[in-house]
Amino acid sequence: RSRPIEIQLPDEEVAQKLKMGLYFATWWSLNVVFNIYNKKVLNVFPYPWLTSTLSLAAGSLIMLVSWATRVAEPPKVNFDFWKALLPVAVAHTIGHVAATVSMSKVAVSFTHIIKSGEPAFSVLVSRFLLGEAFPLPVYLSLLPIIGGCALAAVTELNFNMIGFMGAMISNMAFVFRNIFSKKGMKGMSVSGMNYYACLSMLSLLILTPFAIAVEGPKLWAAGWQTALSQIGPNFIWWVAAQSVFYHLYNQVSYISLDQISPLTFSIGNTMKRISVIVSSIIIFHTPVQPINALGAAIAILGTFLYSQAKQ
Ligand code: 3PG
Image 1: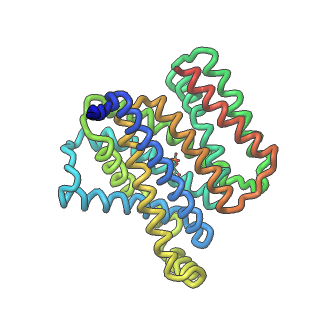
Image 2 (image 1 turned 45 degrees about the horizontal axis):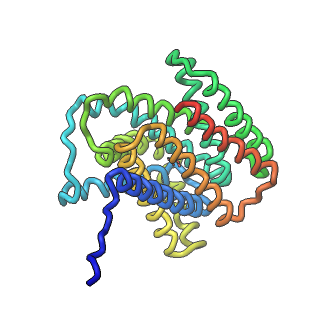
Image 3 (image 1 turned 60 degrees about the vertical axis):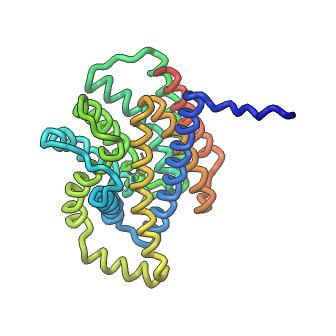
């Protein structure tokens, strides 16, 4: 008689690693889809302030419906929570709209190459504004990040100053977003999913009046008609996809952030940018010169060296 087969269950650590792997893969895939639809929309409808607002609106609506139908438990938050969230939301709004403005002017890959330089901004802000000191290897790792981004920027075939500055402003804003959220949220227990939901809602309130002032319904209506006549009814699906996928990738990233250190998160974020850079170059046939690709590779290598040095 054969003995029953013994199944060895993976221990908790392996299960946790598998779970995180799944989160990361979902986060990156959702992000790639967002970036592609966002750029497809911006190519025919160049109104990044509206598309940024719609992504926040989609997220807010999804979460309000989830809370109302009890698919997700609504958070118990008080006035202090919203007060602490305000600076985070201001930084999130600026970082989001600046990145979208950037992507409306340059290739998606270029925006993300510059955005891979975010750790350099984090160190510079912490050093010069917060007086935090770092070990020498951390500073040295900034050289390939800054050098690589600079090389990629000067050799970019379709360089555009607004596109470049948008990505730089986004980097700066997201560094402040991380600093503010660390400072203000100590001791408050709101899940990553609900935290991001509240962040979307507050950012939506902040962004809407600015979007109306900068672009406005007249331009949107005319642009919408042009885009519809060029693309047909599919255009509406593209807008829906960029809006919903923006919320989904951010939501998954905030859920993951609940379970990992900020350092692991930033390594995951850099790997996310590699998938976006490569897939957008393939999909949009972005022209890349070898020296340009070298700059991107050096910048990304620098980000990995930075994470090693910080460890
Ligand atoms: C945005 O629109 O907010 C940016 O594309 C976000 O950039 P991220 O890749 O840093 O989330």
